[in-house]
Length: 372
Ligand code: SF4
Figure (cartoon, rainbow, N blue to C red):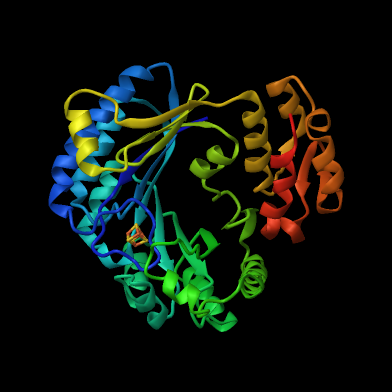
């Protein structure tokens, strides 16, 4: 399996927690940026003629903020330059404060068949606190425009003054509005973002409180028929995100646009984070990648385990052996011994027990430390 990731780095306003590559003050560059992005798609497409792609994902930034004809243009270019499977999953991230009927029509015309909506919380005061541009009513409006479409909703945990009732209200809104998939993840506080002050002042829930909110949300989602298939992702049967599953299976993907990362032919590379440098580079006919590394076999083994252990499927041991020629027990004897109480065997798959999935990072540390 292989995926295409397209980064759209424009937003109307910078959220207080945002550490993504997004430029709220450079929207006038959108058309010129997309012209460069079409060129990068062509350059990458020429080089990847032997690949067939299963998924496309427009992330950001806010892809739904720029004129929709630019998304249509990007999809036309992808169809022209890459071999895309007929039933490819094509996702667009959408901010509820930036959507209208004609935009949705253009997205459908472009072939977008899955939407990922950033609700975060149904509590308007919390949305304002995060610096989000939408309120809960905008979310309801967006979902009405998407009636009958396949869409996912993002729910965030660990917000200032957030209670279990708030999480319940948010999940119930997302479910009643028709989400087929819900991503429920904890707010990550990055140094250098405005919300860091709230963290320093002890105004955000601590990790135990977040874990409680998560457990509460997980149970509620499961009662509502959403099955957890990755630590932060829940879906109704058949609605798991193929694009993300490909990441967790350590599948290949090509990323285009400023700051986009790729993993192709055993190499990881990342484009420049600088908008001007990105455009100058592509206009001059050069790839805008600024870092590139061949993944060593030892790192590849750890990545394979780490990514698979995030999911409910765990590591398929036969697949591991076929890929690397060695067994999990040979490569990670000490880690397996130290983490045995957190793990279980499901047929040929070794996975983290359900009740420990939320703390998988502290389990995976033992695998990272193992000498291979
Ligand atoms: S909408 Fe997303 S990318 Fe844009 S500023 Fe907010 S968090 Fe960052």
